[in-house]
Length: 32
Length: 457
Image (cartoon, rainbow over all chains, first blue to last red; front, side, top):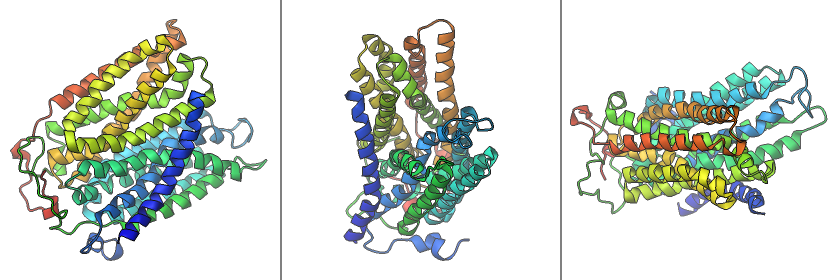
């Protein structure tokens, strides 16, 4: 059951982290 | 009565089910429907469908294209209000499925509208059908999460509603990448992008459909004992949706949400031109980065503030939103005069955390005031405040700014009055929140409710 929960979090977490990373990468321009 | 896979009874969790599987199921839906916040990435390409590199005669104009998003938000609020009780009755699985059908299908219908170049079909597709998907999807996991996490309802709903904020962070780069991938010398790639996104979002939302579960009637977290400490603003009774909206508490919360969202959405919609006009050194690209940063804080605030509200209380959390928000809005003109970009960015990042926090904390506030019974449906009706704010916020900011410029005020200072008016709106929200009291017992639901619907703290 713990493995299934971890998998579920990975499935939603990976795209979310990708979105956060892309946004932060762009946001750095604000302070350059 | 629904039977089979989609029946509420089929989604009741068995013994040993880990409740932390439910928030990602809710996130699978909210991360998709949160795409709506990034719809503006399609605005310019939609005005070049015929001309490809630039608008040609017969192409749609930006003003008309802007209606797609407005219609979607209007139908988000309306469908949440109309279908809230149905969502409560059929449970999260069927409502998430219908949401996936509407949202994914909305993209496909809109893609057809782009293919035949008929804007009204895009309005029907993304605006009406997609908007219904947004509304039903937004409220579908709320009451389920509250039942799974009676000990931390703010954190649980905050996690899901955080996904709505985070959806834009994924959708914006994804849309740009897909349009670039599908673009040819004879196509902007928007139609193909709509088809692809419709299919991807439908499939991703189905993960939530398959994995969501509701607790069994007598379930409660292991070792959790409801607090016996008296708190007049956390009820142990229940109020039905048809009665709730007749209470003053509903309209006070409606005012709280509407004022908080109006102030935030007005700024979010004009953040890009505002930073460019207040700080002439900021380019359009940098302004885009600023908007992205605001979206990030909007998302983070949803989880942070909703979780915080479990510890300090819902009313205290909104008190912070309104008092700190007023101070920050009122200080923006001074920060602009000082020419301090870092302070300006910091002030708006904090404001946006509270904008998102307002959305994420409201379901738990409703549960505290009206009980678990039909809290999802009550939440649906309260979201009409969002639809009103979605029109009021941008109109206020744009109208006042234009009036200021027309009266000869330099562009860099044209936002000062707007900021003071936003602070005034937050003062109204503060008064609504301050006036909040427990619901009169005459409104309490007297019928039998499921054990997991009983309130408590």
